[in-house]
Image 1 (cartoon, rainbow, N blue to C red):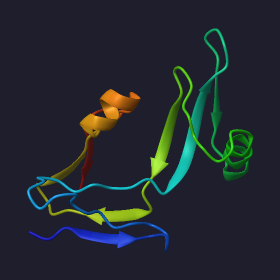
Image 2 (image 1 turned 120 degrees about the horizontal axis):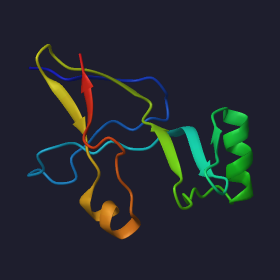
Image 3 (image 1 turned 30 degrees about the horizontal axis):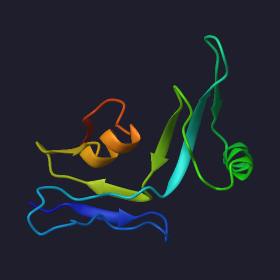
Length: 113
């Protein structure tokens, strides 16, 4: 069984294991595709263009801190192919989940052929 991983962006980082005994690979954030922010009441704003996201990040000094009920679609800059009958699961890191409240919305996120 081979897992084929292709960089679709030169700045993307290939998946890696933090420790040899890890059962899975870590993937890394490369770009923000969409950013959802709470706008009060039942309203929210979806920033889905590169310019709008950049303008928002410029206002918060290039550091993304998600507000209450905020969400972001984060790209890895990778394209992955897995064999038929197999899947890839994207799961939150337990340390980030407890320390920072970060998670995968549909955890585990499933990538299939």
